[in-house]
Each structure stands twice: as C-alpha cells, then as structure tokens.
Length: 104
Image (cartoon, rainbow, N blue to C red; front, side, top):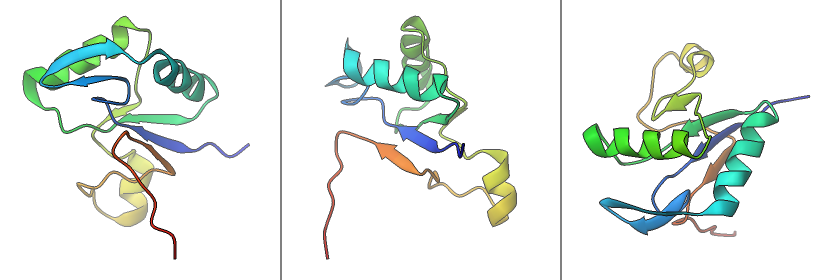
C-alpha cells in the first residue's frame, strides 16, 4: 500500500478562522486528519503561524488527539530526493480552506 503525504492548514481548516486567536475545532476536519494519520500516511502541519502562535496551534491539535509527523517542514526522504529543503512543502494532498482548482 502506497502511503501519501498530506499537508493540513490550521486556521480555517482544523479550526474555525478566528486568527490570530484559535477558533473552535472543526470536528470533521480533525477527525479526517486523525484517520489519515492512523491509516499510516504522513501528516504535515502546513501553516503561516510561527513562534508562540505556532506553539498554540500544535498544543490545540495535541489537545484534540492529533499529532503531526512534521511541522512546516519536508520529510527527510524528500529533502534527500530533491537535494534541498524548499520553503514550499511537498505533499500529495493539500487540505486548506483557501484552495480552488483552475481547470484547463
């Protein structure tokens, strides 16, 4: 079974967007993230938060039973594959409330 990399946004995705404060949990998204992780996939927290605000987000997720494999960083195998650690996180799937698709 091929495992995938999922990059989850925080504000507006795992919790309601109330930034810079943390809004109420978005239960379906939190449940989905936990299931994706339980299925053996790699889970990355992909957020613009930094410093204390990032620490608060990590604690919020842990408080809801969600642990990430990486926080705003690429897995070592992708760093080795591409020869550098890009600021853009590589993932097979990006879960974000601000996304849309442009079709050709």
